[in-house]
Image (cartoon, rainbow, N blue to C red; front, side):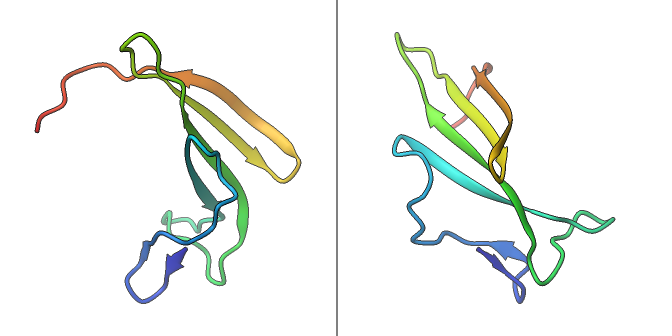
Length: 82
């Protein structure tokens, strides 16, 4: 959920995303990249964990309404600093 006062998104109790991942709401933005207020949801991005054999793999699914726009696997590479 977008908080107009802070200008940031915050977690919500919505459980409509994937059971093995997280859903990000995609809202329409203005020319400067800020969400249009009142919010105008245009779709969502689901990230699901599809890791196996020690290789981190995320499934990314982008959809607006009833139409899927993209569905692809992501395998991050590099080093994570703790």
